Length: 356
Image (cartoon, rainbow, N blue to C red):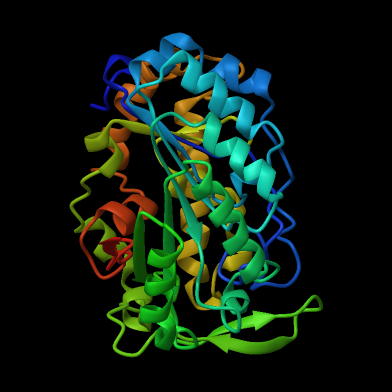
């Protein structure tokens, strides 16, 4: 059985699927080139937010975090108002925001700091220094991101520097950690990318689909690639998997930019991921898409503008359907994300945290 509404503790929100960056491994675009045509831009309004998260919900949960599958929350024009409303309703909430930090001006960042509750964290994705950062965070400027972060910190904001290691930036890890400490970041974290699937060379495309360069994992990376043998035998691997759902343990849900309630961002992203999937895994991808269709048919309507979070989580469908998809008809996405097998994603993985 899945948990009920009364047990809900945390909510993962995608309040926009728009982003000014073009990170090559993000499914929002095709390897950093053209935008993914399956994604239609959508934003929550402050009225949407208040309708979906009324005071009853905000006073029950311990916190929520803004982190989109495809968008950056700071692109939503109502983000500060959403934070202020939440803080006013329940000042004990914990709010976390994941961002590339490359948009808005310094005054906006100071205003955001003042709107957040005492318990908060804004995670800035900064993958290197001025000469390497934008090789992955395409469309962002290192100096602007750093100035925005400094403005946020100067107004009382608690910030974290999050660094993804690649071959092109691994030599700057120590320098970035030192810079984070110098500028008042509370924490510095780093990890290997878990998005190398079947090859250690990830092509980066231009706007017409031409390969311009390759991303590569850092030296000594423990990333486990999906081999052809695994692809050929994935059904047996999934069937043998023991699925231990992470969000069932943490009592959290995900609500996407279209206001659809799902257990997690991994399941919610399935209809939009084709552009980021390597052709060698096409057979797996096609079955994942069909499994998603079956799941949605079983769940019914989960649009949070049309049906409340409580009514979704307490519905017979939500309570019962997961037993099937974690046992007799196992979802590949669940087996890959919350199972232990040769398809498993490295758990985001190898995260190292330094309190500064």
